[in-house]
Image (cartoon, rainbow, N blue to C red; front, side, top):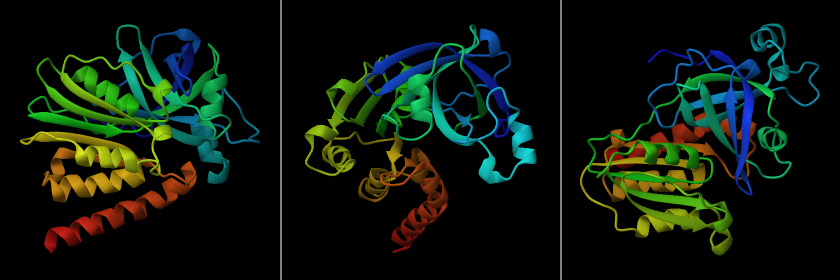
Length: 283
C-alpha cells in the first residue's frame, strides 16, 4: 500500500446528520461539492484521515495552504490534527463520511463538528489504516467505545453471510446506541457507563472477560480508551492464548489526558505494554 501519510485532501461538508445526541455524521466531497477524484481509499475497515484545524488564535484560516504553514511556521503554530475513522467511502459519488463524537465545548474537533454547516471546508491528511476482518477466520471479536464505533460498524459491513462475530461496545447510555447492520451472525452487547458502578471501561472489560467467546481462529479488534485496551490485550493474549498477529489493539485515547498529552505519552505506553508482554512470554 502506498504511504499516504503526508497526502493532503481538501474536503467540504455536503451533508450533516446527528446519529445520537453526541454523535454527528459529516459527509464530505471535494471543494465546491465536487466528487473526490482519485482518493486512495484502502481496503481497511479502520481507515482514517487526520483532520487539520487551525489552532485557537491562529492568524490563518481556511482556505490556507497546510504545507506552506508547516514549512514557514514553528510547530507550535501548526494546525491541530485529529484522527478520525472513515465510516464509509462512496467511490461512485466521490464522497466519504466521518462520525465524530461531540462532548459539549470540549476539545477542538467536537465543537467544530457540532457547529459545522454544509459548505464548510477542512483539510485531511492520509488516509491510513491497518485492519480488516479476515474472511478466513473462524470467528471475530470486536470491542470498543464511541471512538472505535465507526471502525466496528465498518467491519460489520464487511463481514460476509455466515461469519460469526461477538461485538461489545461501551457508550454513555441507551440514547447513544446505533442500529448496526450486517450480513454476519452477530451477538451484540451494549455496555452503558451511566448504569455501571465501575469506572469507565471496567464494565466493558469485565463483560468481555465473562462472555462465552468462541474457540478456534478468532480475529480480534480492540480499540478505544487505553485503560480497557491494555487489560483486554493481556486477557486475550495470556488467558485465552490468542496469537499476537490475530489481535488489532490500540489505545485511541486515554481518560484524563488531552489529545496532545496522550499523543506525547502513547509511545512510552506502547513500550511499557510491549515490555510487559515480553516479560510474561519469557517467564
